[in-house]
Length: 140
Image 1 (cartoon, rainbow, N blue to C red):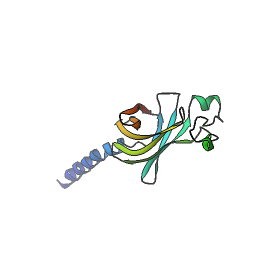
Image 2 (image 1 turned 90 degrees about the vertical axis):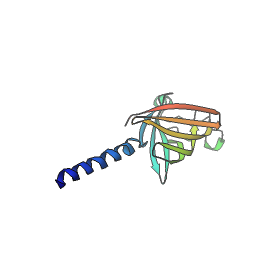
Image 3 (image 1 turned 180 degrees about the vertical axis):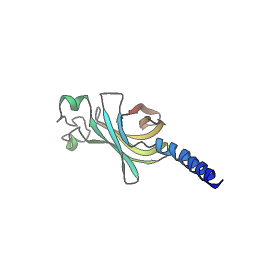
Image 4 (image 1 turned 45 degrees about the vertical axis):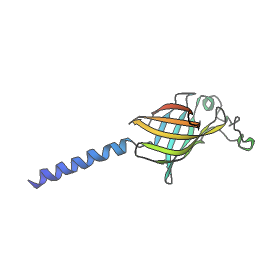
């Protein structure tokens, strides 16, 4: 009689742990614009993300961050450019981070919210309510 009870408890623990694992935002994500693919990873206690590829990078692998508002950073290549930094929280929402947009050279306050196992909502704001939201789809 103890074996079925142990198996039932083990199954319950696995079932409870699965949603936390499903909410893990680390991995490669497709953005809805410019063919962008961003790799989100853990950077210490926070989440960060780098641009792996985009339409511009595919056309020119040496494309530079020419729209950066800081002239000293305009020589950086777009490939592996840090786009997301400093996001903390979990299990389904991370706040307090920064979102860099190489299309306009601006950096915005951001929030990442998991909306499913394979989708997340990234919100970047100059100041609330001046925000833009995108839905990203998991590639891997």
